[in-house]
Image 1 (cartoon, helix red, strand yellow):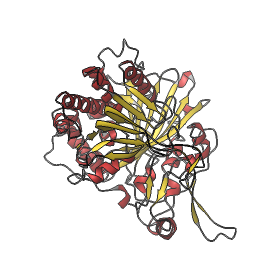
Image 2 (cartoon, rainbow, N blue to C red):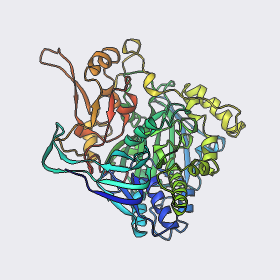
Image 3 (cartoon, rainbow, N blue to C red):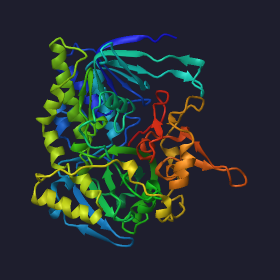
Image 4 (cartoon, rainbow, N blue to C red):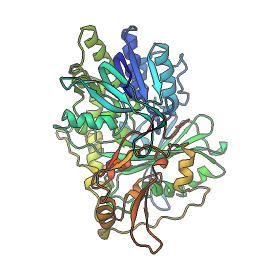
Length: 543
């Protein structure tokens, strides 16, 4: 079937904080602009997962009266706690000795999903056309090679890619400028980077996976506004990462672990590490008598300024975490996403006012370089490269970088790709993870159930293998199939026949929570994550 087409001034792919901020800013500048935003989740916020502690600086610039407008930010940070964990003990670090990036005075503990729902309502009130449940599946180009929009994916295809009885073709959304705000490791953003060679002058991006649970705890264990970060146990000192415990709302606690995806041991499981973290004597009492409400996981781009691609290209721009704008040292990206969306919206509006279309928004990276966001990212640029050198070396050197040099070191360290760092299984020691007890610790499948994840089984698999032989001939043979462990949702499984022979990789795509870890960490880069049907995947309500 021929696809229908709709034309707009600006099309935005992704309904996270970056995309919504761009849409709002465009309509604030010129209410007559035609602005369309598509979101692959079933609703705005359905696929949004973050810690989250939010710096309100960018939101205040975007919507100065956000408090009067009812923004869901009612838990101001009241206390920071930063603890080093050993297996059975802990040491609290004095807050006054911590670099400013680790302090949260003036910030708020929030649900970023609820924040995006509120931003979506603000955007719709301004006249932005928002279409949830529509996944951007294809980039469209004009005769000169410039981006002219995107096409949404077909609905109702069968597993072999053929139209089924309920088939509906995708739609072409054409625009003078297209902004890509898909979040970390965006499916279309990857294609844009490759086509326009946007990474020619940047380091490889480096990533982490954040695994999070939402709990309702006993009021006696609750301290509204407490923000706690941990480092050390359960991970070894050669693995970058740390835990977070955020108290907000009414007896709600966000608990999670961030694990850098540059780890070397193929037996490491970020999911099991997070479960093990909760058993620490300092943390376990928090969960006594508590109820686990939700679970989710998402990769985050942590490489910093030197790993960001070129931001503009003919016909559009990358914004938010599609461009890697997360301040890794602060474990914060929502304020950066909002600011980048505002900058892109402002430059796109100016270009449209000048009668331009489908050219490069060169003013956008220029505005970024002149902004406080660039300054903040520049100050934090050496965090991830230092931490990649190990906990102790990294902590000491980053402390010198931030406390003594105030982020103005005369050097910039560089990043290497995460997928290159796995060692062969024969060179590593397996990790003995305890079995879940179903009270404090859990398995993957019961966790995925709490993410409300759903995919129609009779559709093309959205986890594509470039070479079907590699999972067994290389990944299993050399690395003991690490995809079984780095996936937090039980998607990848090695199955054998009754005799225990003839192993094969089984992909349980219906479990996928869209974290993108497989696309990032696969040692041969053989897995390509593409969008499934629109509206599928997790449905996060308070994450």
